[in-house]
Length: 452
Image 1: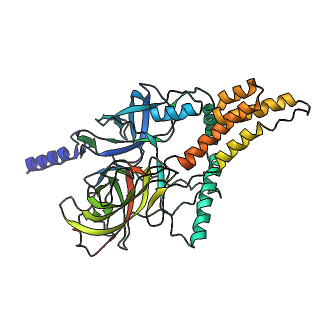
Image 2: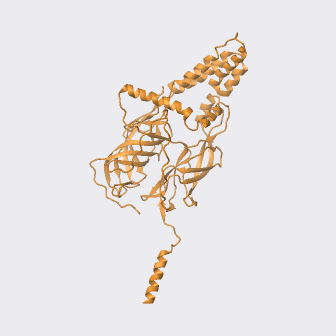
Image 3: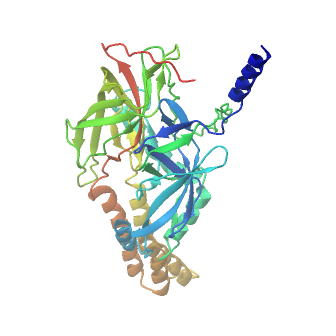
């Protein structure tokens, strides 16, 4: 009897002692990771990069990498940014702009350990513009035009009043120089994909931090839509997903079939999984038109009408695009239609033209006329070629040369806004989107218990 008790005690102790092997979850190859830097970085080969995950990462319907997990890498090469160089030279800026190729190699886990991983080399880094569909607009044509003008005015005011205005002023001054340092801007993000399966140790689940107080909303800032709940027992789902296909107003066609992958599981009110992570959304491009001359922007609209589970079960859905990431300034209307963000087409050309005209307003008889002429010439030259134009205006006595340089700058600004090809609309592969999805006459999804 004593022997049996001792044997049972030994078995219990052995079961209670950890075996030193942490439980892991496999992250499959091809998993997208959206990372973003939180500071300005030098543009040079070998530059270390510390970025954070913008979105949490799930595998097998389990959270394995929370948002803000640190990912590290470095710049491996620099290639010439030809398009930006040409545009800059027209403005008198001879900085040899580059595009960095970046490789991310380690994930810093919650316990501080570095987990090496293999990922694709990326070169398309840019700040993320988060576009959010506003509530339905009230009023007719005049109301819509008023809202459009108000959006433009708010964007103009935000340049001078939003946080970071000191840095924007410094960069503006740099932009007047014929050469200035390059950098990777704060907020630049990349979408990388894992190129090999990765076993990630399961991290302890931490209590969510208390949400930070919402910043004070000022009158010049764009209104912020109320946050959408990811769980809804009314039959509406808010689905976080990644586009599986690149989309562009220049190359996509009407009726083109597109896919997206559900990035996070959606739960029912009874804590079963309604939509598992990894499910596929199938849809189509409903309207696509390339950008044209005279500032006519591209058009690109799409929707998803079918949801397919990993086991092959499918159901029909109705979707509306509620939010999306973008590498360019876009806008969504209340129906989820994508459009280019309104641009101020008049202020900059008008200001430059006035500065150029000021050079011709020479008062030769007033005291200090030479000084005033020099300042006016400098202002006209600066309007066209920045510091180079300022030096030309100061060094010469002809107001016509300074005015000519200023009109050149005004003409470039006018051409860019009124005559040049409008902005195209693009969404890269693995772009993060949010869909508001309502089920239609569909089979009931099989309930799956939440992994504990």
